[in-house]
Structures are given as C-alpha cells and as structure tokens.
Length: 337
Image (cartoon, rainbow, N blue to C red; front, side, top):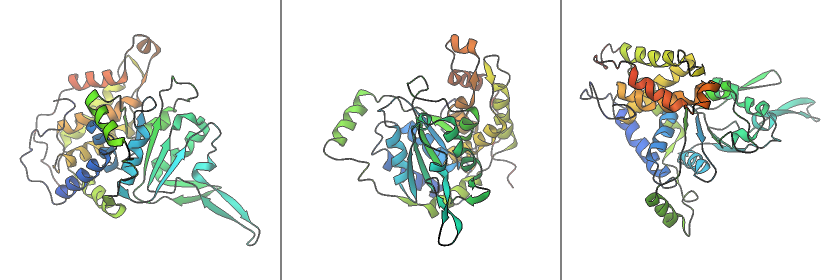
C-alpha cells in the first residue's frame, strides 16, 4: 500500500517500552503545530518524521502558503534554543557560523558563535543567498560541528535545520547545490489549502496570532530520549534490502542524470524507523518505508534535460519505482538482537 502508514505484516506484535511515549509526545507536538498550519496533517507528519530521524527538513513552495509558519511552529513546540536566519544575497558564511574577533585586552582571538549554535535553526528563504553562503551549513548539518579558523566547535543536541525555499524559477533565487540538497533528510511542499481549511485559517487567525500563543509541549531532554528510542526501532534484513533496492534503482533510470546517494539509503531507513514509531510499532514494515520514500528521495534526484522537457518529475519516478520494486513479504519483526 504505497504512501500510507497503516499496519501491515507483523503489526500485532507488542511494541517495546518507550514507543507509546514517542507516540504520545509526537501527538502533542503535532496538535500544537496544526494550530498554526491548518489542514495539512501530511506535511506535519513528514516534519515530525524528520525530527525523529535526527534529520533536517527542506520546505519548498511558493510564497504565502505557510513555510515559515511551519518551521516556527515546530521550533516553538519544543522548549529548546531556537534561532532564525533570514537568507539574503549579501549574507556571508560567517554570519551563519560565527567569527573570531581580536580582543585587545587579552591579545587573543575570541570566537563569537553565529546563529547556527542552537537546537533548532530556521533558515528562511535559503535559496536567496549565494551558493557560497549556503555551503556554510554543510558541515553543520552532516557532522553537527562548525570549523572556524582551524578550530572545531561542537553543536548542541538535538540539532535540526528547517529551511524554507521558493521555487528556483522565481526571481532572485539560487538553486541549492546537489551536496546541499543531499544533507536534507526530507523535502515537503505545503501547497494551497482547500476551501474548508482556508476558511478555518481565516477564522482562527482573525484577531489573534496562533503562532504567538504557541507554548512548548516538550523539551530538548525529552526529544533526545525520543531519538534514542526511535534509533532502536528494528529493521529486518528484508527491509534493509528493500531500501537498498529502491535507492539502487534510481541510479539505473535513464531519465536521471544523478540518482540517490548512499547517504540517502541511511536517511531512508532512519525515516522509516521514525514512521514506524509514529504508528506505534518498534519494527519497520514496508508501508513505513513507502510512506517516506518520496519526501526522502525525490529532492535528491537530478533529471536529464530530456526528462525535464518531457515534463517528468522526480516524484513520479519514485512513485513508479515503488510500484515496480518487489515488496518483501517475510516477517518484518524477526531477527531481533
């Protein structure tokens, strides 16, 4: 069942202690975020999966649909350090990572941390900055550290970058380099709300700002414990092979100039573990992996010029692979240990 998170093979097995805690806490965070982002539960789900997968989220869409509101709502739902970076063409890498300043009194250079030193970093309109500035986040996102003037500084845990970007066809934007996109665990597009959701949004936002009234429902210590629980969610050999088959298949498509990287295999399995935990299971089933495949893989793929001219999309290609690659039918919660 492609793109769903319902229980499948082995779903009757009892969950390990802690999974209920993950489910309860994440439900509270989701309810908090949905006070701000009305009528988009699927987008909120992917954002929470990314959080539990210890990853980073890229929110891509046209202006005015709630990209920044989603990022801020998720950040404010967790009682931890939060910083926001407004990316502009004149932004410098040191404006993000920090800079060493000479102290005349001590006659030494002192490091002044940049806004990246926070648990949740909201990067607004990341593709309005130059590629040089965008690359300042590469080390932070991959290694959770910053190197300035030869000195390395560790970032706190948990650490998550939530970046928003406008479509690259819009004026004044720079396409994210492939290496930068590959650092993002998942990408979501919010899209316009339906009439019912837009009416509810207008009613709820009239006279007050839901974002300003949002209060934390979890803290950084609790989130770290949830990450530990999710990391222990079981993935069978069949599930791991299924993930590898999907990723390998992207490298063999004639429509693609660049397929998914080995990093994406790791991110796909982490996201599948998070999806399983959201569903109340301590083991991954094929539906979990299918439910996160498009958000995790599509933004990493680079189409050929012929495929773009034929109006093919990476999302369609991943969806076709999910329909074509054989799904494991064995017991997905065996081989524990």
